[in-house]
Length: 262
Image 1 (cartoon, rainbow, N blue to C red):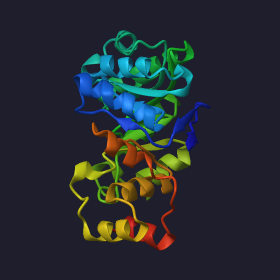
Image 2 (image 1 turned 45 degrees about the vertical axis):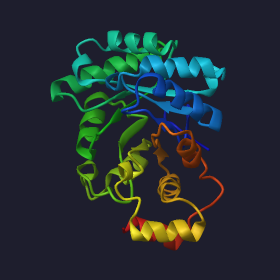
Image 3 (image 1 turned 60 degrees about the horizontal axis):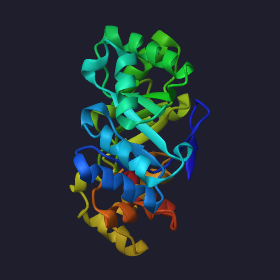
Image 4 (image 1 turned 30 degrees about the vertical axis):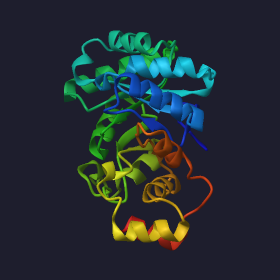
């Protein structure tokens, strides 16, 4: 399943997150995920695993055009965006990045310049789509207002247990997900499994039993049905496979309401 970005490219609705996964285990997780059917791999400069992610992609033998690769510019790289991108391309052993994100909102005076430079690099073919991460509604409004360039993606932490976090500030009585939907911005959920904290929640366990699925699969299916891209992370091949196995069932409306109000 894929979603259409405002850049014209498609993004898979589920991907492998690689935060806190480094060295050989990072490469193996990428290989395992691609073998299971994943086609979206999410990394970042600050994760310090771009080399291993690139090795996994290369060793998989899968056509580069069939893999959607996301990486991110870190806070200390805004003084030379082009150099930061080139370092990521070299580490990943790639000719282009499918999605390049501003990892965290930089200082206000820097945001617009970084964003304009990323747009320029996308026109040069080094990036296919550009987006942001950890942006609130007000920060999105400011960025779009200053540059006229709408992000393709906003990546934020989302689960039924976190929809009231600080990333969901209200602007003009519209929440973040709805705001992004109205602007044509795809919302991508990191930490969709609550980092394991809520997997024993009673309501979640009840739904898992009802659908004969795991709590993790219920959470990921909720994200898919909300129109989100979800990027769970794991180093365990069985968990990686389990997380991907969410397209053979649908949560009923009443169960979506339960999760939406959990």
